Image (tube, rainbow, N blue to C red):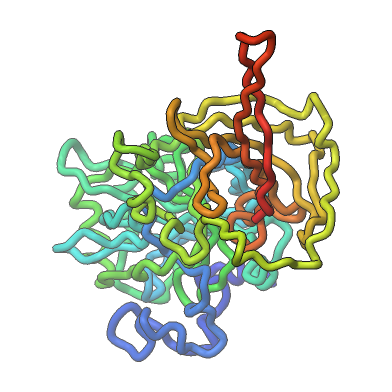
Length: 454
């Protein structure tokens, strides 16, 4: 099917015809958003659904999310037609003319349409995504397909569709924007009729001076049935500011109100941010008394697993230890490489020695079921007059403890920390002995003891 022939059917999340031919709606029918999962063949009850509430304190910076490249976003010849399809207002673009790439996207995407989500004329809260529980008056979605894929292929590909999401904020100051005034002049309550657009504005005109280097990124879905989990989402941090009267024209002229899907569960997905995006500082944690999150409160930290059932360290009671014949000898690869350490840093919590990424220091055997790549080692200690190992043996605490941290070689670090055996840590107790020489001079000597890796 030629691209232009199916543009009529495109909605944010419905790049093909409505799910199995069944009707859906936001309000007033059997298949409202809470029942979209009942539509035969739809994916609306799966685990990678959109939109979401972006909790900024849980967002991680991803330095691979560089600048976008936008092709023909400034073209006033690209926007060809508009339609009120009964769910939203959608503007169609000329085929194969507008493209987006970069920004951490895996390839080039052909932009095919953009559309809007809004609330009602009295309560201007209709964006689909939220940030820290805040819902903006409107949201614009610019929809692109991975270049070279058909619609059917794109909706079946986990990265087949790229959607750029822009929040719209209502202002009461200054004159109405000319591009947005031109766009709203095409709004109508007549559904199903495609109307040609005179070339009076471009996508770039609508975006205006929004900083396009500040954005959030996560993997999600289309936000209307069939809710295909095929979308690489980009949600820009800065909103587009337009006059309140222009926003009110969307529900007033179209006779459509509250056309947005409620936010969905994140389900352990990670939301990332570009390096330029402003994020709130992470809550500080500490060991003793000079912050709000001491060890007894670590479980309250955002995203914390510190209240789980498999926590470390432990007191190792010798009488309870069971011999496991499977715990054979370890195999250490390049543990004798004196050039493997890249840098040493005082993290504010410990002293950490980080290894070079290409050092190829590895550990296997010892009952481990995988090969593990060593990342770093660090230390735990007490004060001048107290011992500070983390593990204890029969309640005896040693002066220090060294941890050599490795991750499964077949996993990324993000995957490893979410896997029950993703990390292997070798723990060594360090104790102090004093050797007297020449009757007066004392030399301190350290000895190590090994803890079974976890």
